[in-house]
Image (tube, rainbow, N blue to C red; front, top):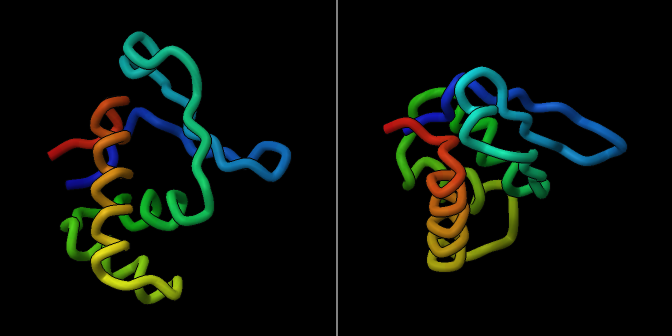
Length: 88
């Protein structure tokens, strides 16, 4: 899976925000704000990766166990799918 190309990441006033463009702007009304950990996962999703790859990124960057990282990644991916940001 990876991020669709029709979202632009911008840093505005210290916040990381995804802005839909093109077709995505017709489906997604508004912008998506990313936390620091969500930004880390979003950046990893710029290229094809698996859910396990994302769990590995979280456990390497933060002091978090695999079970908690797996839950967090699952929640993040669920939100990204709901908004229509993921392909694959």
